[in-house]
Amino acid sequence: MNVRYLFLTVFLTICFSATAQKNDFQQEVINYLTTNGTVKQYESVFDDMFVVIKQQFSGANIPETEWANLKNSKSKDVDMAIRMFASAYRKHFTQDQIIAMNNFFGTPAGVQMRINPEALNADQRKEVKAFYDSEAGQNLNSVSGELTTDVSQISEYWSRDLFNEKMNALIAKGYSPQ
Image (cartoon, rainbow, N blue to C red; front, side, top):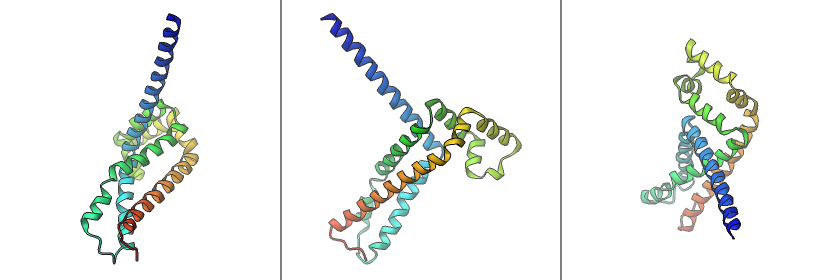
């Protein structure tokens, strides 16, 4: 009887430990996607989508309160995209590589590299070179094509489903696109 309890305790400890490690890794990727500007980018994509939808329903006289209600899900919808992107990043990078990428892209050199690499000063260029010479930087270069494909597919899926969801919500309330 005691052996069963011991086995059960060890088994549950291993399961909970593995889950906690996965959650930590997931959070590290989400932190990185915040640092590298992906979260802001998809907040803009969400907002831009409403410009298109408003054009589709331009003659439907939809009140601003209805538009506001549709936009209330922005945080939840963007979070969903980020969680999906995180799975693609976990596929290509280790947790240590994600931490290194987050650390680098959070520095002034990393931010400048992302915004305008031409404006890097000499010291920043050295930092960029050191990062890309590291394991994380080399892996980022080697998987960039596959990662871009994965992220593009996820982005397409997310934006298409979100667009359809918002269009269908308006149609269900009796509004007709033009």
